[in-house]
Length: 273
Image 1: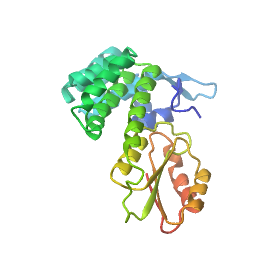
Image 2 (image 1 turned 90 degrees about the vertical axis):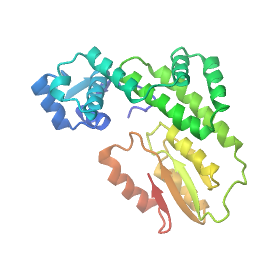
Image 3 (image 1 turned 60 degrees about the vertical axis):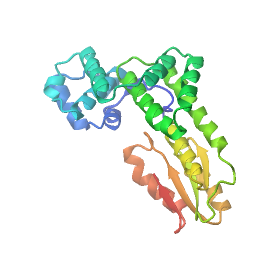
């Protein structure tokens, strides 16, 4: 399985369905009717798609959600689709000068500029406001830039690690004795096997601590069996909290829940995903 912090270069039609939300049946129809994608075939006649195919389909899925018809979108070139995505973003959310500055600093790998803009914003907003109103839109913009072929993995890693560090700084500011006495749960935040995108889970852990709830953070790619040590060492109730971006894939969700319940959950425990 390809780790999520690496770019996958070849995709199956099932991958496209999982990543775009467009069913394999619909993709096949679009290929036949509109010549939308022209995948290569393996010796066993299985379709193989490129990252450019994925970007194109993501753009089409986005524009469809805003009322565009596939019959018209199929006539557009890749460049025209990317231009429409850019126009859509500008109309949906006029980016603030600060957000644009962060984006430019990211594209130039300018750590000093990134830090200067962040510190300035920190004087105007709480961290929660800054994260939700500035950093989340920045992450959305990163996704759009990847869709339109204007971003490489190094840019994403650069900004993700910057944001991760800032979350840890905020966590370190919370006193160890900040727990609410009447809280009945120990909350255990973790990512399942092969899930590497942790910013959402890490921010959730910060929010739990900031409101005085007792929580433990385990991080990326945690096997269910590895959680047994947690269960064995805690006598009270546990609320397991997991954050899924891609893994487990749709077909494995029911199996994950069943396995987790049978191996770990006591009657008084909970699992939140």
